[in-house]
Amino acid sequence: MFFSSDTSHTVVQGTVKQADSGGDWILHHVMDGNYLDFEPFGKIYLPHLQLLGLDISITRHVVFLWIVAALLILTFLIASKSYKKSLVPHGFTNFIETIIVFVRDEIVKPTIGHGYEKFLPYLLTAFFFILYSNFLGLIPYTATVTSNIAVTATLAGFTFITTQIGGMISHGPLGYFKGLIPPGMPVALLPLIVLVEIFGLFTKPFALCIRLFANMTAGHVVILSLIGLIFIMKTIYFAPVSIAFALFIYFLELLVALIQAYIFTMLSSLFIGMAVHQDH
Image 1 (cartoon, rainbow, N blue to C red):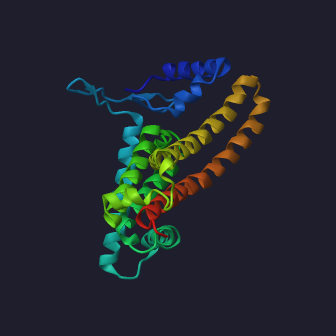
Image 2 (image 1 turned 135 degrees about the vertical axis):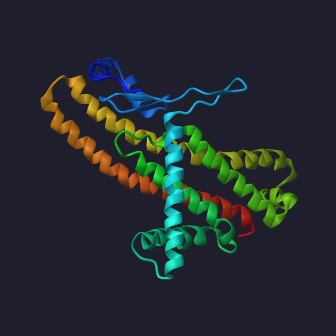
């Protein structure tokens, strides 16, 4: 349901008070919630659902996950239908093909090498999903799903599973895990090395998860903090400086959104290549 205009005015006043007292209002905008936020106009509360005692409620980030998924499906449906009409892409399809070729030739193929074709669909999907999520989150009244650690952990989990399966298919389960141990290692050090290598298998996806989550959250926190300085200083004369810096960070976030999609895909591809070609 929407708030009335009087309630919206109360929300704005409450935001100012929160800005005076601390940074809770920033987390209110960055974190997930059971509503779609359209302040100062109001909010739309989302349904609360339970299944067998489990809370499966639809949240703000879930809604925008669906939107990103719908945009991805729509994008590639348009691109695929364009190829049915002509083998030479035009307009939007040409733009999408340029990105796909870049990911294939500049990221996946150099880092994985022989056999990269098997992993290209996953890596392309991850790249476009992160790219769309990051850019969508920069639009007012939306949410950045990649600032939710559950989302980035799931993405990192898919990379982890793909890496292990790829390594075991290439070398066999025993050969893959045997290849993790450097040749010529003294027997006395084997228990320690095994623990270090097993720990290393999990630190790679953990780093992917935290890097994406932290970078996308930090940018939004900085922008909101700069805007909040207007209320903290309690003077309209500080607004031009605050808004100017916020706009600068916003345009910087556009670059970060692209870079983070590139880095996640590149590192995922690198980890897969290391697992598939252990002898290189």
